[in-house]
Length: 322
Image 1: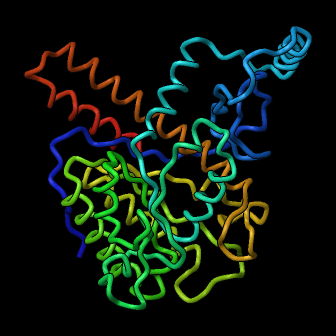
Image 2 (image 1 turned 45 degrees about the vertical axis):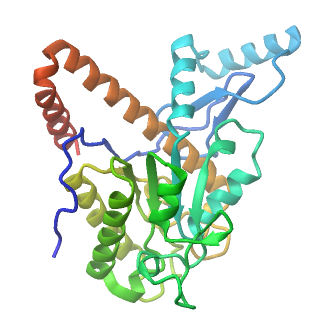
Image 3 (image 1 turned 90 degrees about the vertical axis):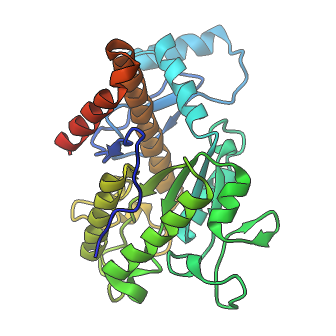
């Protein structure tokens, strides 16, 4: 039976389901654009790249002309400030997950010149799951991400790292073991342990991504994954957690993992897929920051004594838009 995990008195986090529908656009010179050739967020994420500050006037003019031809506006000072805030949003975050998340870690490690990706922290391991995350460390069959040279319970590692935000994605190695309800319960138990070890930590659930059509294995098939993600969305909604929908941005017209984003003819993903991850995550962070600013402004307008009513208004608006 599904049950509430936490009694949150802070602002409920925005649940973001990002639908990516734009076509590829060019970004200004000296900017890094995170996207692949398809399925971009509504606004292309662009921000200062880690490149030499000086560029020739000719290069600058050519770049500006290219921007005008493509119809993309130059980034304003306000936009640049927001992108810097988005960078900073992830400074105290850790990404937890299985081999799909491990792929994102490897992607980031190959791009250490990038100011955003170089700061990301990970607790990921192949075959990791909500089930074996709870297994005793002494169990020879257990799988636990390594931190400071040792396998540790993920909640202990998060506390040791002092992380303020946790982005977690699990399920691929669970569904054929404990089914939908059993996996949900194990996930709930794991999140409770993280909350207990790190009071006040923000938890953002990343929905499970899909597999290629025709590659189903038992309960590991896309209709079940969609149902599972719906359950996780409800979990987030009921407990004031965040939910990030990356899966739909990687799906083809049939709702399966698009072949162009798959690296192994099954479920694992390539660099083009992780380009999309970055776009969706940064778009999500921007939404979180804007909501925080909205609540702060509303609290200033209504006075400190009425802050809770402003937060309730945000929750009501969020649920009404889902």
